[in-house]
Length: 337
Image (cartoon, rainbow, N blue to C red; front, side, top):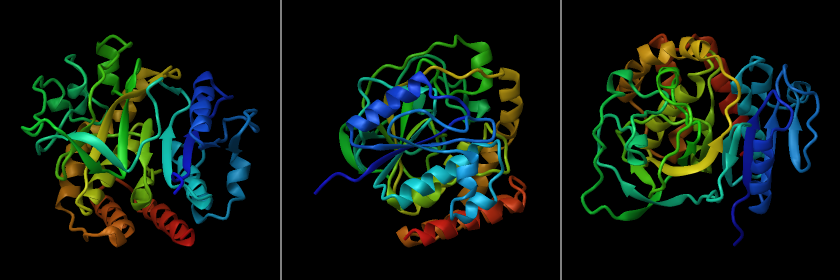
């Protein structure tokens, strides 16, 4: 039996970057394909062999309901790339950014990953498994960020084959940290290599869209919200996705660095302002999600996603308008079955 078809999905407002060429080369060597989603500020064309590029005008002609409702100038347009990959037969979707380049160790992942099991805990700073330095992932509660204890692994320390339909790879050189870390620490950072870590249901850790692997049972959970800040869309997506996969009896896997980032220009004070809703609200969001009653089983994933958004709208994290996009996303997925 052949391997499932691998698709990479990226959104950009730039001409083809050096990092994106490396990504395309890695995907091509693995028999994969790359979809690039543009936006209003981006180029009208994209001169890069083997890449399927969709300008804003192209996106508006797509048959998806979601394309009629997504705002321009927003990272959430990446949702259309996910739908296109699924439509075209993806068996695995790898998402990344245009300023990330695969390392020599990058290789296609499988649904069952070898990983050591973390002991259950309310929050785990996964970064601390791969470095002794003071660092935390974007979205991690600030009140816990300076804790130095390394989270515990199960006593046997052995690797196990863990089914994990969402897997996150770490990033070297410019890892995904918040503006507070960037304004108070040296910018260039490298993690040490090491075995992968599996987080059990009930254990929270932020994950992002920088080097992330997805398989079909988790397709509905890829949805990135539009009615929130740019710096929160993937983090809040990640909290919702974690809550929903727990109803499958599954947890997240985090891998040692598999890409390096040549970070696009950022205004750190702008990043900080965009992260304030998370600094103030992330712990409350996971409390609300943790108290939300969901339905176990693979057939309930889409419905559970909608239930989570309904609860978060009621709690004031999103406006009512977000539900129109969630329902459009789910309808589009249904139409691709």
